[in-house]
Length: 173
Image (tube, rainbow, N blue to C red; front, side):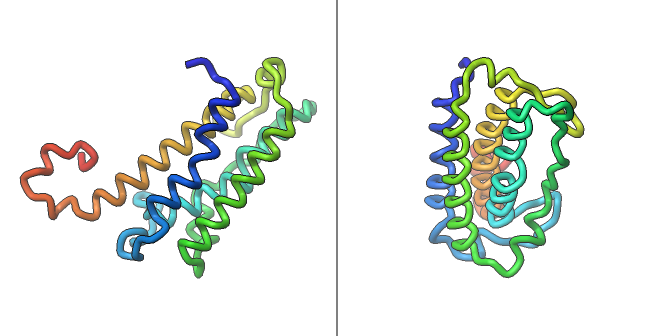
């Protein structure tokens, strides 16, 4: 499918709703565990999504659209949520994510993106030159990746309890 900003916004606008529907009424037994960089809990993933809203997607789009001589992105701390989310409840994180995403989508709409603007480039600290279109497509797929991650983390809570059916449950592979 060819990238279209309207199609990306369809996914981006639904992510907070999906995540809240999945996690909003679950106990801590489902959504938390010992956090580490190897094995995030669902709680950690929501914190990570907030971090992306605050420091990644729109700030990087703004850098690209500024068309400065140095369109370099600041490095993104993919683990900042492990500290920033401490002491917060999941419901606080879900509300923060929904509000931050709404603000990001408003900013995205205000950019009035054209095909020409989507081809403007920024410099990723690890990957090098990237287009605005690639950034926005990545934002969309990033959301879907983390929805999958949340569902997988939840499923793995009962991985040992399903017994012989485990062979039929691809999410537990």
